[in-house]
Image (cartoon, rainbow, N blue to C red; front, side, top):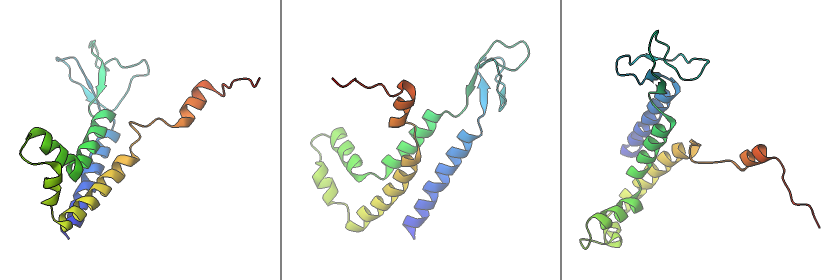
Length: 146
């Protein structure tokens, strides 16, 4: 019951962040303007306010969304947490000792939550380049058989 509630919280957080990114709100970088809108100029990224020379930038970028998804994934990664703890507190306890102190039920719960967060992270294509991209970009450049 606790794990399912946390899974629901993870999913709700991911949907909230995705919705914020999907709204596509942009803000002017000029300190006197700070116009926020969902409209974009066809000329590029100039501010839409009359007389403003600023540029429009996304309020919530794809990089911020990816960082949030990575953070959610790292919250439930026991291996990562043990290694971080060992690195920060040198000589206090090894990662193996820390893993021994975690109960089997907690490890199962963390594993389920890590899979949930990893599922959402896996659906994000921010850090992936499909092989077809290079095929489309460069075409079928092949060496002639000799």
